[in-house]
Image 1 (tube, rainbow, N blue to C red):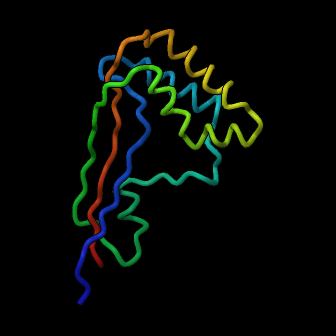
Image 2: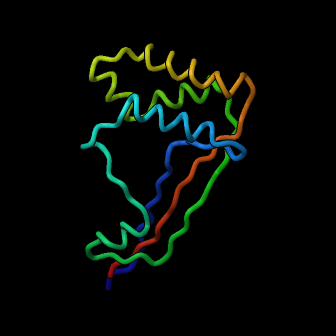
Length: 129
């Protein structure tokens, strides 16, 4: 008898404000300017997990959203940890250039105050099929 559960969870990058689409629009520009390498990404969701899982089935799932209040400087530092930034650096773009671009373009709408940034994610609880 096989007992137990496997819980899979994932968060997308914080890319939205609750009260404005400006950060979503900026994030699209950020990913267009510094795209992630194709071989380092795998889209997953509870529906995809249910479709591709061999030997497991999804018992339950939930999508969620968490808001965290951040300063623009903290957000820029956070964005420097994204895989698309690492890929840009491997392609020869100086990290300081990416950081400057982020800080300058975010300043146009973020100002210097704290803002709530939304992080969306999901979890899926799976068991043996």
